[in-house]
Image (cartoon, rainbow, N blue to C red; front, side):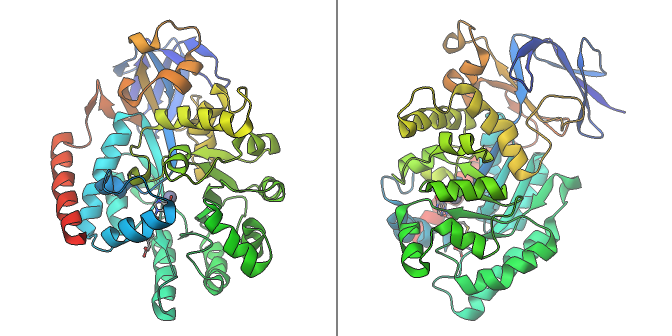
Length: 428
Ligand SMILES: N[C@@H](CCSC[C@H]1O[C@@H](n2cnc3c(=O)[nH]cnc32)[C@H](O)[C@@H]1O)C(=O)O
Ligand SMILES: [Zn+2]
């Protein structure tokens, strides 16, 4: 049995207390074996650092790193239709592979060990995730509007086929979901036909919902009900399902989510950048809804750093509630770790024996993390992705002393830059 000892650090425990202790990982099973004063074959030096659960980015489009900075400062609708979708129409499998690797390197360098991804050419994303040693819930994003019936059904079938084929790939580090893009970009008849098939396949369903008022009003007009009531009517919002955004929710929809146990992935930076609105996160937490955190794609963020996201979630949550005590440091750290992990169905996000050995070590030796009154506060408000010293997933070291071990970082960056340049050249 090969073991790895994360030694000499302080450790963030599930109750958010911080303890000076070691963490022993089983590299074969990929689980945490024990916490205490321990010894192991191989050591990862955490002295002067804080060991935290690996961060979980529960909603992104990872290959959109290629479009980072390509189109900014626009509303969602215009941004997608005028800039993003035309560029994405030119994407090749090789582009997606290069963009995904870039995004995964960025995530590893900022302490993220697991993600949810919805995009195109998902077998490329799956291969990149496997090579990265990360954990992911993946799905092909299906859109039916603008397609004839045959093409629309093909999209839905593609999403199901991917979900069926890749579930359990990479020794179980990859799980899948059926991913219709949103309630307005996939027609009702396609939900009616394919949701039962997804249930039969035993995969959860993930989609964008209630992101902007443009996604709410047409549904109210056409169906005479709020979007999430419509979603429930379509057979969505089972307890394993999760939606991205949930910005414009009324009280009835919040209660519905709580009753059904479906999760919400909050993407505060994207919601601010696209001026989509302020999600009622404290209300969701108070109602007992499962809330996770995601960056969304790099074209609407513009980075994949979950430390930024925690800070944004806290700031925006307070503004939305008109209450500085809302969405506190504890809540955002919980959202970025166990909250997101539970939504994705991974036993990660907590440093405890038996849980997945997914963690990051934060260097506390920095002016912006001094003094150390409250390390949970630092995680939420002051730490940055660049403070991460080591990243470990499934017991394997993905980054040691800021050196990514799973990819040649320089080569990944060069390949992605070249691909991105050629892509936007074709799209313009
Ligand atoms: N098969 C689909 C692709 C869907 S992938 C998921 C899509 O979500 C898009 N996307 C990224 N961010 C957002 C967002 O915030 N809201 C809605 N869509 C987004 C992304 O650009 C991508 O086109 C097609 O034929 O277009
Ligand atoms: Zn999205």
